[in-house]
Length: 308
Length: 308
Image 1 (spheres, rainbow over the protein chains, first blue to last red):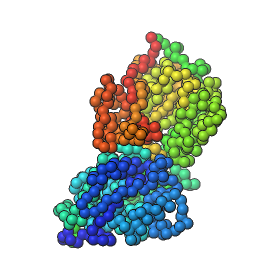
Image 2 (spheres, chains in turn orange, yellow):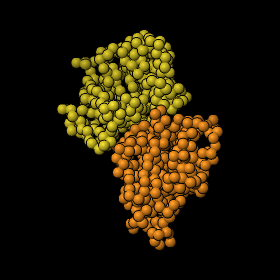
Image 3 (cartoon, chains in turn cyan, purple):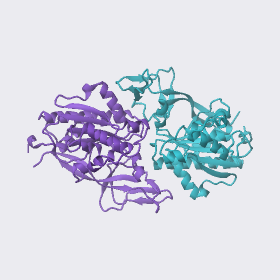
Image 4 (cartoon, rainbow over the protein chains, first blue to last red):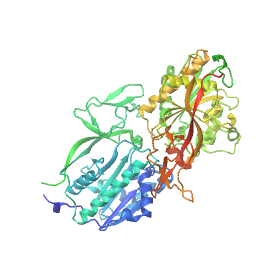
């Protein structure tokens, strides 16, 4: 068990890192952090790598919407990037971004930090979409420095080329996801937490590059995505209920069998029918109404910082 | 001091009442309450008046935006309604609604309840835009039935014809304003409070019509609008700061001279410079970013329920 086993994808060290904000045009926090850091580059520069910044979807920001035509953060599967017939505002922008930071599979940039916010009460969340000792140690480092950070894993078993997230352009990436904050609003607490978490990620990459990662806690509690569940719907697919007040704001809190999840508009309570406890995230996230998603269900897991 | 002096504008009793939702297309609460009540009319019917319901801006709802072209709730000045050259989506819709519920000045409907939500932490707020014993008693009744309701007054000294709110079509009106809830989200607590307050308003109108208003508290604490203040701006008018975390969520809490109001993006704190205490509302309301408004400032007042 040693630090030498720590490996990343692509090159041995991270030479080029990109911080992305405004992938969703009404998530103001990342956009305004970029504006700040562009004026004060030293805040995001470190000695061992180059940092660049990208405002991903200014058109959506100008329209004060999450996206103009399609969710930009669902446009980065390799097959979508190669399909020139896909020509909506975001499908075109995805190809541009792939040119700027990628191309995916042979990317110019080694690491992407993508800044997001949520209307859900998730607190400062580090979202991992890849597995490995590097990410487990990153999670251990961030939670050591910033104990209120929650680590949430959504590392499905797809090859990176099949990932649809913007951050999947680079071989290595994380997402910063902080809430609650309404769409199109800046809350100082969310803004400050997003900045602090980003600085810790930059610091960890620096320590990794310099082979100077300190001794870390051996395990980290995290939550791994199982499935999304939908709001109650009528037979013809219209919303027929809302998140129950007993589960509202209870992200990353245990959902036991029988827990009230929904209240239908005609007054019925719908409870969780699973056989074992789970945990929720993105509970009542505004952007998920498009698809009538109510929340994600997760299992509590332990990440091991050092391989056996 | 007696109940006989209680008077309203227009007719002696309220014969026709309209409940309006979705004046802002991304304030889902009122829209979904209307859907519910349309299926269960008895909930909003009372013996002494007719209740009708209007979904004010379905086009904005379909686009998941506050409005398509203009804020509908700023389109109802008499002069705007008469100006046929004003032909944006909302300017046209305002004229339609004026036909449906008005016309303003000689309206078919005696009373409008307009349902709104806010991203600010205002709790359930009864917004009064008109003065008079009727409204003071209504406020006393609502706060007696629902003690967490805040009464906020924005009864400027304009003639009703100069009011730009939708609700000004009718000679009598109130607005139900509940938060915090993000745009495009239904929170059960906000939904339930909006429904409960609406029912109490309907009950009060019924009691008024039947000359059966009970004995009420003699005074009611309320907050009266003084002015709106803007976010910190650069010389060329761009946002240069945010609501300070010390004032975030502190709607209707005393703002003393020296209270931190804003944090600029370059780290400066801007404090309240007034000489006497005020109170804030609509603190960090998402919709107000369009005009870079930060919050409303109000003075604490006492409404007297019975005239001398």
